[in-house]
Structure formats: structure tokens, C-alpha cells
Length: 209
Image: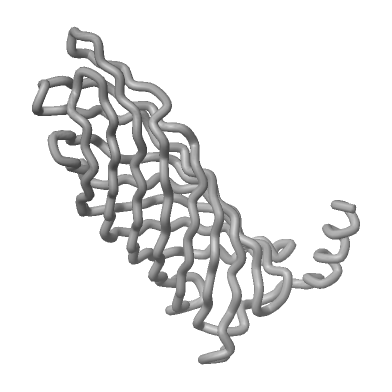
């Protein structure tokens, strides 16, 4: 079945294909792998490292091609990570559970490499934007908290597109996402992680090339 689908796509995409429009929409689903985060709880006081479970991420974007290789994009994405374990470096009997959910509003720039090979288009990109974190912490021996905070966010990564028609491409990529430290009541923690994602890019029939 998988071979049949691949063969159909290959036939559909026979020959090199260029984008049909300067304006496009994109949607992504991904695996968000949050890195180990150092934190401080100022009421106790206590500090240590938090490990998070892997979680899903979702994103939507609208982009504009400035040239054959350069494009800019506005993106909104969401991810949520549950705490899997906590390593307290402060002496005492502590436990901590909860989660951190994050909305990101990003302005990204990408460079597409024109290989003209099998309809595959590698790319690299970077971006900056705004992060909105909402954290819930339930502790034993430390304070509980439920709060939200804003911070500067950034991303850098790359991937490849496989163009199946002049107006549609499948996208796969990796990026590192980070933000300034998040503040939740008496908790301050680092935030950053890896994201592997896949999606579809579809050209809007405006500004045809």
C-alpha cells in the first residue's frame, strides 16, 4: 500500500515543479521534545532540574515568497508538556508535578535551496517572536502555583519539501525552540526544546508567478 501511494505521488510529481504562487498557507503537526530545564522556587527556597514528557505540537502559518529562494512567514503554534520527573538539588523531601503549555507567535525567514532534483527542496530558517507560557505546579514541600508569563522566543532549524504538484508540497523538518526564562508565581524556569514536525504547504492562487 505504501509503495502504491509513493508511486502515485512520484507520477503526479514527475519533472521539476516550481511554486505556482507567491503566497501560501501551511499546517504542521510535530513531536515536541522539551529539554531538561533548571528552575528556582523562591518561597522555599528550592531549586533543581525538571524533565518533561514528549508531547504533540500544532502550528499554522501564512508565508510570502520574496524571491525564488527567500520567503518570510508568520506562524502561530501550540504545545503542552507534562512534568515527568524533578531532580531537586536543595536538600529536603520534595515532589513536583504539573505541566507547561505554550503559545508561540513567530516571524520566520527561510532560504530554499534550488537543487532541481526529484522535486526535493531543502531549506534552512530562523525566527523570533513572542511566547506565552501557562504553568501549573503541584508540589509537596514546595509551593504550588498556577500562572502565566510572556517572553521573547526564537527558533532555528531546517528540513526539506517534496513538491507533489505546482501548488502543494509535503514538508518535514527539525528546529530548536527557546525563550527567555518563564515566571510562574514563585517559580522561575528555563524553556527550550527540540521539535520534529511534518506538514503540508499549499499555494494560494494570488500573485501567480
